[in-house]
Structure formats: structure tokens, C-alpha cells
Image 1 (cartoon, rainbow, N blue to C red):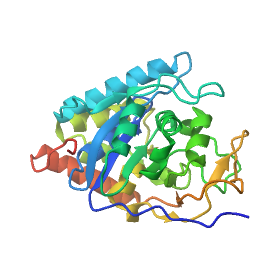
Image 2 (cartoon, helix red, strand yellow):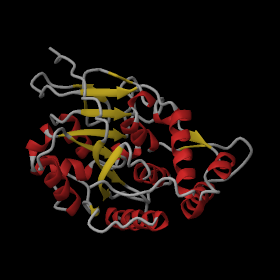
Image 3 (spheres, rainbow, N blue to C red):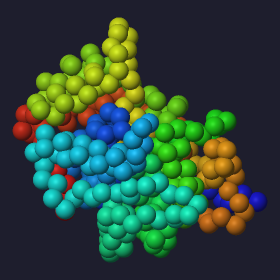
Image 4 (cartoon, rainbow, N blue to C red):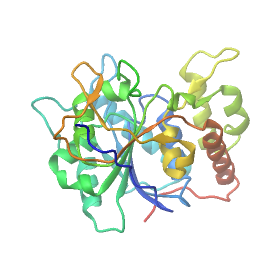
Length: 310
């Protein structure tokens, strides 16, 4: 028999969170990092974790190095001190022989999760789940003290769950989905895929906003060929958008799936732990982009600061 469906808890008025990001993999993580740092009124961002990724011809460790460097480039343009707030993650993916990779990010997550607080720590993950799974395998008890929001994979109705964040480390994805941690899953196609923007829109609303605006606009423009009608997804804003306002990312409460060896969503075994789960159905792109654009303009005018929470 399938377990009853449990709903993840709503986000509190100010969300204590960490952000786990493969920041240099593409261009969307950068927007999400900036969004989180500019949202101190709603998010208490405690730390940013650099996550590995693998490009053809490189290594996961090289991807980790690039992610860490990109985080610091963003902090520099926002004039934010990242001392003690940016932590390196695992330098290799999980495997049948490696259930946990010792790394500073996972250690920091365990420490923060176990620190007494009124509610759970929110773990917003926008890359491979290696750091999160390593922490869960090293300290399973943290599953009851965190809520995970993950952008990755595909919705359950698709025949194939395959997507970059998922197939980079499918063992980590299986670990997180099999854990008892409450999980909000934001699939790519049909949900985060609504977050389309264009060079013209960014030139109008982002480029004028100082060093960080120029940087975000430049990496977007240079990422791919530009032509009339060209747009691109900024997938990862779905995750920061959700924790700022869950009304921007409507979800449905469904049974939590497991990930098969063939990268398909299947039913959890009957003895799987009862755990809260929700799947995003849609993303209100206008509300999320408006929030980011307004905050960038306020920051440039000196009306809003960027930074970490206490």
C-alpha cells in the first residue's frame, strides 16, 4: 500500500536557509544567488555551498573550483563579505562504494541543522544533490531538522526523469528522495521552464543596475547565440522564488517517488519512511522576475542592502 501523503511545512515569515549551488555551471545559478542575497527581509541566508559539476573533458573537482570562484565574483560585485559563509562541497560524486564524501559544506550543513532553532533549516539546492546526500548519509538524524527545496529532474508524469542536476549524481538524488526529510521538488519542464527572459528584457531592467546588473546581463547575452525572439530559462530562480513566496510556485501534494536505475520515477517501497513531499506544478514567472528586477533597482539606488543573515 502507498503511504499517506504529507505536506511540507509552510515557510516562516523569515526563512533560515542555506543555498547549495553549482554556480559556474551555467548562468541561472548566478541570478538565484543574487536574488537570495537581496532578499534579507524574507530570507535569512546563513551560508552558500559550492557544488561540483562535470563538463565534458573536465573533472567534478574542476567544476567545484569554478563554482566557488563564481560565488566570490558575485559577492564582490554586491560588496558582500563572504568570510565564513562560503563553503566548498564534495569534489566527487557519490557511487556504490562512496556513500559520503567528506567536505566543508556537508559538515556545515550538519552543524547548522543540529543547532537548536524554532523550526527547521531550509536547504535550497539548485545543483547535484551530492553535498546534501553526503550530509544525510553522515548524520541521518538531520532529516528531521531540515526542509529541502530542490530544482532538478523532471515531473512525475514524464517517462524519463533525466535532467542535468539529477543525472550528474543519481545516487545522491536517490538518497535525498529516500530520506525522511521533507522535500519540495521543482521539476524543470512544465514548472521552472516558465522562467524565460531575453537580452532585451535584461538590458532594460538589469543592465542599468550597476556592476552586478552588468555582469548578469553580460553572462546571459554571451551564453548563447542571440537572434530576434531568442529567450532562455533562468531555471534556478524557481527555488529562491518558492522560499520567498510559495504562491509564486504552486505545488501539488503527491506521493513521494523513488528514482529507478533507468532514471524513471517509480513508487516508493511499502516500508519507505513516511515523509512530506510536494511537486511544483507551475511557476509564476512575472512575479518572480518582477521581484528580482525591483530588488536590483533598489540595491543600485542604495535603498536595499545585500548580505547574509545572522
